[in-house]
Length: 359
Length: 271
Image (tube, rainbow over all chains, first blue to last red):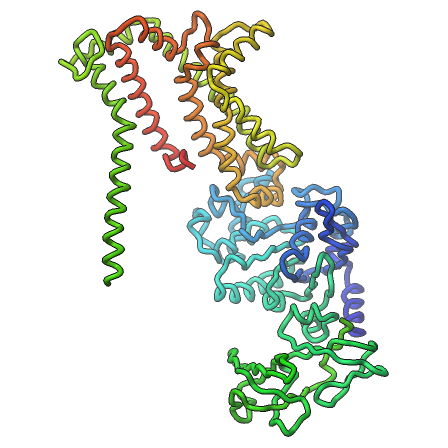
């Protein structure tokens, strides 16, 4: 936590944030959909709004774009309050989930649209369209119509279409949803590299935690209209502030325990320090656990089955109380094959990597 | 293989049934027009079937009778006026019903439908009396307005259904890409609504030309539209002249359909 604060202070002191979201509230009728959302995004930073559907991530994105007005709070870009600025004058570019390419216009006219609306001279439009299409590697597609493009190409047109107006902030609303799984992971890496290379400050909305971990410099995990934790992917993964964040990002094992005198005793006999007292919830990632023969430890269970995930093996261990604990091991680190129904004991590799939550 | 064969047998019976019903419906729809066309070439001076000879005499008479030609031109004017009025009123109404952010959008879209649900005769009489109340006597203009009120719902509904299937993100994208609301309408919404507007225009134009029930009460004394003229013709003469007029209309309708299918395509009219 200390280190996180220091990191934030460092980014802030370097330069003023490009985008400041300050205490934004939003209501739909009587329902509050955004609650005191506060987030600063630095120059060239990619921040992901991550959460399940209905958590308010898209609402916040739409407030930044100006499609909706916040009911309270401020949204600033380069220090300028965006509240009175209409949608078509905000220095933001939106890549929609559906891409929203104009079906009656060619690729070139889609990409040149913003420049035409602004009254840019035709010769300049042509040059900038060509440049934008080169940026997304779509030269030669100028006279195609959106319906004649693949999903991945459509996405790149949508990106070129906003890049051409050189927005200060790029907003991406679940841009990979329409792509199939294999293309998705390639495009994620490519898009991150492209944005980083262009240095555009970006807000990226997704419900997919793996996508968030791939794409972001920082992740803001949202829950019920609030930002629960905003930190680097490492921090979110290794030091989640709540069981909600831990559960949403990555695989996790939870169990109940008692905290006494600033200590929680872990089931394998080790103990970990905590500021909490009374009933607590303890969380460990599967890769921080290891299997041992039964007689080696007090935390015992039976291997239910083994899941092979690429270079990892995930053991599902059934505990005497019926709970399942997941233990992950690198395939080549495995000493000897573990049989299903084998009695094992579980050990915690690094007790400092265990999280303790109040709920 | 057995299952496949059994299902293909029921498929054949089912397809046969559908095919039979389709052919029957087609005959039901087309037969009257064909009979009228056949009668229009008959040599006898009264309407009868089957014909006894072939002549183009009745078609010649259609274009020699000045009141018939005038009524055709009147109807053409009504058709065009109704279509222009329906576009000017119907497209904004459809936009308001679908994209409007005010209370009563549902009420509005129901309200537009009401005149179309009222029998044409009732609407015609109502417009006649309403006109008299404000000192407007029946004329080609009153008739055009009355038919516009009657048929506006068709334009609104056609444009509305297309609008509802447009991705709202398209208009948001236009706004994000620096378009003013007017620019967004001009460059994105209208071009995408064009097929629906054209389809609606076909319907309103045909209604403007063909409507009798509303027109009979609202048309100008000296500006009789074609349907009213035809009604009088049927009442006072029994020659195949009426059939020849219908023949002209049928040919015009076919020409219009071919024109539509060649320009925007019939599929666009249907949706």
